[in-house]
Length: 283
Image (cartoon, rainbow, N blue to C red):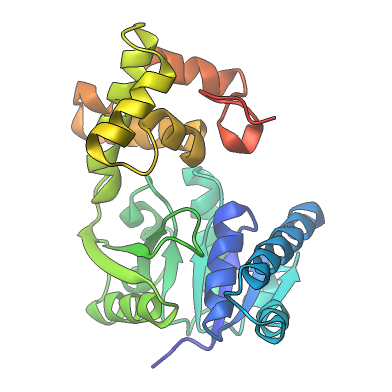
C-alpha cells in the first residue's frame, strides 16, 4: 500500500529535499517547522530547485507547478495529524528528536511508520520515547535528496517487520533504492566513509599535502567525483563532527575520532558550503 500523505518535520536542506522527492512522486506533503522563516526559505529553495529542473528539460512547467502544489507549509504540528507516515529531519540533537517523537507518537496513532533521517543517533533511543516502538525506523537519505538515489533503512531492535517493509516500499515509491542496515552508529555508508574523510582531514592538518592535492589525488587516482575535503564541506563539518562523536562513542576506535582541526573549524563557524567557508571558501 503506497503512502499518499507524508508529514515531514524539519524544513532545512534535508527536509526540503525529502519533501520535494516525495511530491515529485505524486505524494501530498505537509512540511512542518515551528518558525515561519525556515518555512519561507524552504519554499524558496524548492522553487529554485524545480526551476533548474525545468530549465534543464527534466520537467515540464506543468509538472513543476503540480509538484509545488503538492507541498503545504505549516508552523502548527497539529496539521500533521492525518499523514500516512512521517519523516523527521531536524538537527542532530538527541533531546530535540526525542521530544519530537514523543509528540508525533500521540499525534499520529495510525501512521504506518515514524522515521528519522538521523545519520548518527540510535533509532532505538528514539523508539524508546514512544508508546509504539515497533513502528519507529530510520530512513537515512543522502544529500542532495532529489539527486541521490540511496536510502538506508535502519531497523531498530523493536522495529516491526511490516514497518521495515512499509519504509522500503515508500523509498521505492519515490524513486530511491533502499538498503537495509542494523541500528548501529554510522549504519553502512558513514561507517565506511567517515574514516576515509577523517584520514584526509588529518593529512591536511599535519601539512602532509595541500587541500587541492589531496582532493585531486582521490579524484584522478581513484575516480572519485569529488575529493574528500570538498565532500566534507558538502556534507557539513558540523554533521561530520556529530557522526564522528557517535561512531567513537560506540566503537572507541581512533579512526572514528574527529580531528582537532575539524572541531576547531566547527566551533569557529566554518561548517562548509552552507556557512560559506570550510576547507574551501564559498563566497
